[in-house]
Image 1 (cartoon, rainbow, N blue to C red):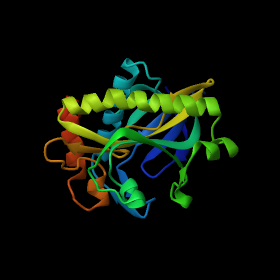
Image 2 (cartoon, rainbow, N blue to C red):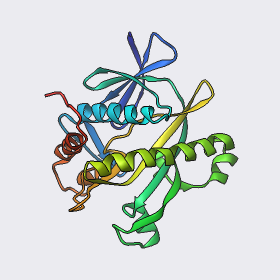
Image 3 (cartoon, rainbow, N blue to C red):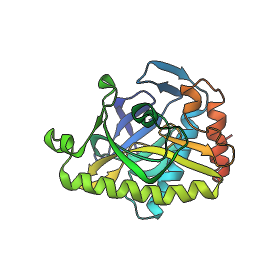
Amino acid sequence: MEKRAELYAGKAKSVYLTDDPDLLILEFRDDTSAFDGEKMEKLARKGTVNNYFNVFIMGKLAEAGIPVHVEKLLLDNQVLVKKLDMMPVECVVRNIAAGSICRRLGVEEGLDLNPPTYELFLKNDALHDPMINESHVETFGWAKPEHLVRMKELTFQVNDVLKKLFADAGMLLVDYKLEFGLFHGDVVLGDEFSPDGCRLWDAASREKLDKDRFRQGLGGVVEAYEEVARRLGMKLPE
């Protein structure tokens, strides 16, 4: 697979064209950001850890019948993926109250949410990823109604698979965001699933094992990610 021109560079990942129009190379960098890019730092090994984490999780989801964009691992920080026509909508499931829902609704962090909440956000850093609803999505053409239905269905399927996966490893899946795109007309899970885009707590102590360690200046960010990987039985490169 020949790597060609850079197509896009985000805050922590870069995307490259290949000699196949249906495939891209996704590169995970060591850059780490929070608060829409206001806090930035490079953390050694983070790109590699997140790449392996994403490939592992996407593999588990694919085994469960969820369509994902990941094709195969290429290098420690690169993965081959399907080229999706991404929809600028973030789908968020919250199993436990944390982060913005506590600020918006005044609920206490750690409150179990039963049933889990489902929220939509517009992927737009300049607007600070505002919360939106299905009507906004349809009116402004960010996704078709049938695609919205499929995105919600898949997002909850992911919850069923991953809540158990993390619970079996002694962790709580607090919340997470997913992004979807179209591949030849079908809705497919894109972007990444890593501790950068979800909240994970130790089930006993509720110690934070995700990017909140970076947001809140707790330290040990990559070490926490590696601990999650170890508990899941993942093999990381030395």
